[in-house]
Structures are given as structure tokens and as C-alpha cells.
Length: 147
Length: 147
Image (tube, rainbow over all chains, first blue to last red):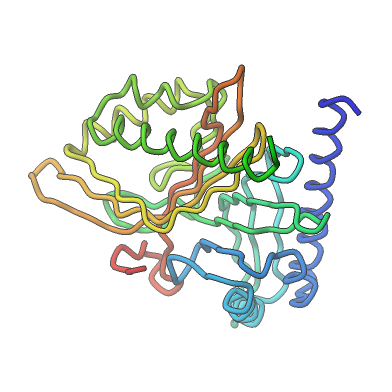
């Protein structure tokens, strides 16, 4: 198999994993969502804490997010994937939406970077980084930026 | 060369690149800083914009940062590196400091994720993601969190 074919195949595997993650998250399926992560995942989420270490801790955070915010939606934009034989990463902008407790729909563009390792022949997410940039004067997250 | 040795060697190369980047950034050397990036780097910085596309655009942003904030310091904490033959990523917490225009020293913990590709035999940064998490109620960046 040529290097190019190999790379394309790994990229396709990562793209399939992203699509599968998206389906799990947007249907609010906590178990299916967590199946994408390695046990020792380290996540830098957009809110609350500097990091979430390990899938048990991250599961509780995902559960809180899914409870707080129903009908979550994510729309990937400008996805870039770099994939080797057993290490890969991807990044994209992500139009995130959801309904809060009062049923109000909120959307904003976030940035999403994901790190993967092939473990026992299967790609798993070992690192995730979500964020919104902030304004230097006010210290407030910038939710109104457009790509 | 065994797979393990190969991986360790690539990890060491990434670690050396991070140290070299750190030296360039903390000495305010714009040219040396930019030498670490691929021409088509896509950066998600902590401030101002969703993304900076290409090293020309990112160079201007770095120049602004170095002008605004003198004696920049970065202290890596809890670095994790995943490195294959030609694709790698790393992440760490980063205690960022600097003096503002009034000479006041500010420090805060940020999250830093970096994506690399080996291009013509040399590792280059093709993706960078810096951020601080924000508080869901106030929408304000959380600068006082401790690891």
C-alpha cells in the first residue's frame, strides 16, 4: 500500500470517527459518546475547569452538559485532519447550539481540536480541546464571531 | 529500529521543538518564533479571532502580542506528547505571564494544544490552539483557575 493510500485511509477512519461522535453527542447518547474516548483522555473543555482527566471524570462533565442543554447541535466547518499510522489529530470550527433550561436556543462558533491514538487497532480520542476566544479588554468570551 | 525506539525518538524531537519555540517566544524573537510554523498553519489563539490562517497572518498577530506584552513567560506543566513517524500532537497547561503597557505583571493558566507534521524531514507546527475556559453564567474567561 502506498504512503498516500495509507494516509487517505487513516484520514477516512478519523473522519468516520468524528461523524460517529457527532451522532452520539447530538442524540444525547452518553454511553455512545463516551465509547469514543480512551480511558486516560485529557480534555480541555470550553467551560468550568482547566482540564478533565480520565474518562470517568469527563463522563460526569458530559452528563452535566447533556442535562443542562437539550437538543445539542454541532456543525463542523473547515475540518482539517492529519493522520499517521497510529497518531492523528484534527481541528475544525464548530457551530454549537442547544436549548437552555428556559427553552431558549443559543448558538455560537467554537474551536475544536482532537487528538487520537490507535489503541488495539481502534482509533480513540485521547485529547480534546474546545474553546471560544476572549476579548482582551473585557475578559469576556467572544460568542458573536463569524468564520 | 523498534517501534518503541522510533516513537521515543519522535517524542524527543517534538520536546526539543517545544523547548526551541519556548526560547524564541520568551526572548521576543519574532523570526525565530515563526520559523517553527508551517506556511499553512491554522492557529486558534486565546484572543481576538476564531482563527488565524497562514503564517503571514499569524506573524502579524504574534508581532502585536510581543508589542503589547513585554517579558512574556510561559511555563509548561503536565506535557503530553503523541508522536508517530510524520504526524504528532502535544498538549499541556501553560502558566502564561507578561507585563502590560503599565508595567503590571499578569499571569494565568492557559491550555495549549499543538499539531505537527514532518515536512521535508523537519517537524513544523501546522496547528496551535490556546485558550482559557469561560464561566457559563458570566461568559467571562476564568483566569484564576489552578491545576
